[in-house]
Image 1 (tube, helix red, strand yellow):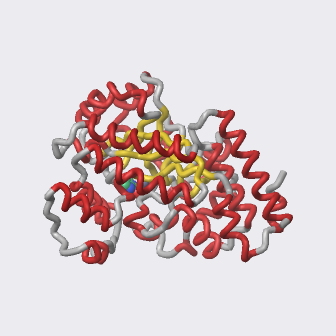
Image 2: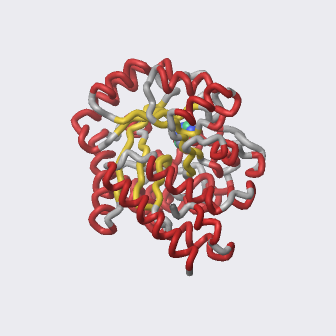
Image 3: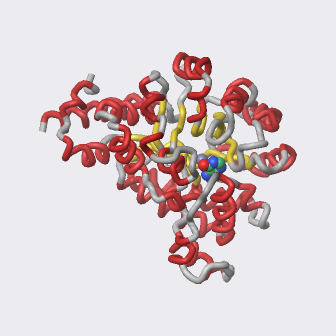
Length: 350
Ligand code: HPA
Ligand code: ZN
């Protein structure tokens, strides 16, 4: 096993090695990849007026105190997305960046209700995103899939409505998730719409335990039957839950830079990523909303490494976990894991 070999990678080569490692990004909201410059370009193209004078002025406003303070500005940014081309341009810009960071797989969240509420039909959203997904596959052989997220601050009836609107495009997404304001919106609110998604054979994930209590993680697992938990960092408050996550290898898609920007932890030195890994939990690292939080996928490996003194073995484990936790076909996952071993061996012996 090459994980032991990871220990031999010289410090000055760690960044190149992480970039070269095959890995998956499993927690990124496509609307959260919209950079201020692209927001302004699309606003101009669609004649949308923004309450900011420039991309720089908009970026200056990115000082968040909690999840809600971010969401308010994130939904405002998404208001420039109107046409199929807009959705394509946004997804293509992000996948291009991710490709340069060595990602072989990406499972992209999208929030159709953010767009249908403004009169943009699901068909337009799907056409633009699917075109970018397919181009990433043909151009670089990158494996990309879409996960439809329900906005938990809205009602279950509204989730049911958007799910019905999305069903004609059932073959263009692989799963459903739950995002937006967590506190006061427990997973139990969405039991019926998730049951419907399971009946359609869709994968199930849910944001839980970002700001909310461990009980929301239990609810996501027991009521929604989530296969993966997005964030999940509050699990450390509940030893039984920690044991359950480790025993059943239920992956957590942790987002370290997001957690700092939204004040879930004061600093990266206070983050519990190492605690989760050392407890044997299948933790992965991800960027969440990189345009708003300023950390790309590579940063989410390298910055916690410095702050928490993670070893190269921890980083190898994070990359391997990301591949194992993905919903890609098992044969493909196995192929990537072999490539990851080969990559670590090559850097250890060079
Ligand atoms: N949490 C909840 N909802 C979100 C997030 C997040 O980190 N990013 C985009 N929508
Ligand atoms: Zn998220």
